[in-house]
Image 1 (tube, each protein chain N blue to C red):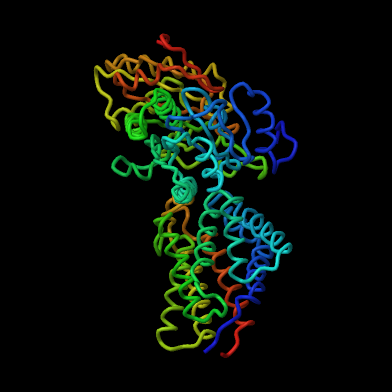
Image 2: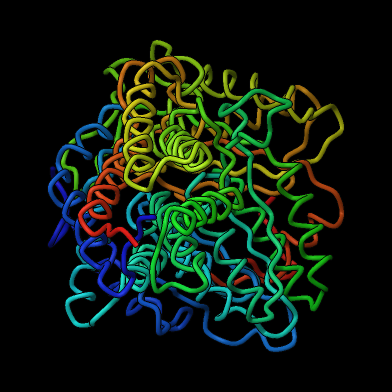
Length: 215
Length: 337
């Protein structure tokens, strides 16, 4: 069985922060095509604040996620603050005995993040939102675990589903959020939330991969 | 950009600094820099909270004060306040009898309010909401859950705030605020776009010589783009959409709110109001309360929103009750028409 140490897992959160910082302009450009063009800037603001706060503490992986969630909740408004704030806070609170995180614990975290989101948004797969990445990612990961694949393979399956889900938003008409008011005009471009969600899950998978140990 | 600003990324902070100084008789800062509250307390009565993105002055903080709103969560320009700001606004407005959160139907606001409510519940603060959806152009009739809130929110705050000030229960405040917004329909016309200071260029267009009927408060697309017409025709086009929606009919008594979107001369708002009054009179609909001015703006957008509220005795009493805010003042025993 494979797992990673929660205690030494902060590099995963740092990788997530870095991918948002590196893709700030890209995310704002995508958003600018059918939204108000501030997605990259907003996300970068929250994730960079988190980076600063984490530098002043010696946090574990789950504590890092909790800090990230808290900052998005209290500092970032709009739609992305509450969405990502909920995901990360719920994920951080989902593992009860967090010394080592295996694929079952990680699946529980994904499930908790999605359950938290269900309380605040109604978007489904096909609505051109980050749900088009998050739900297929969870399904791919849980399917892999059910089929007896190991953590590493399950993460690979998850990343493939993320990319496919993100790319599928190009062909969709937005049915949720501000871009939904554009109707047909929203077709033909990526959804910015799906793009950032894909980046974050990719960074998470890569970060976990580097820390996985056979136990 | 011909603007009076210091730093494009800090227009909200800089605006709040001036607002709090200018209106220190009515509003005070709180420990959260994105929450402003009315002077005075809500001890023993229902508190009223609202919140939304900045750029709509005098909404939202301009309606803080006696008889209207007790605390406001302030967002970035055209962007929902954080869940944390809504939560702190709930705490500020809580006087032990619960809090009515009366806000507009936008996805960001919906999420942040829901999250904040969840947190407030853990602290034992009872929160109930009414979500304004008066913009008839934002979704067809029958899909009112998709409609946005626009200038009609002001009348909802006035009515809900008056009820709360009278010592009513949370149930009563929520019921009358819900009735207020259910009886209220709005539509906008846009003549020119607006520019977010931090962006520097408009993110939508309205061609010279055209008008967009049904435009939203953030430039959301309307239902039709027409050649620019006279105030007379504009009034007709707006009423053609609003009147069947309620429906308003002969013998009704209404409140009318005509709000500029920021850059339209107030003179022109009166020209439009005159046309609206005449057309309503022809249909046997009597305006018994009227509000004309820049009540709910969208930065420097040119254009106007027209709001009609179908009145009954309870709504009239609430509109006439005392209120003392930057954006709206009301003296008992007097009303405008």
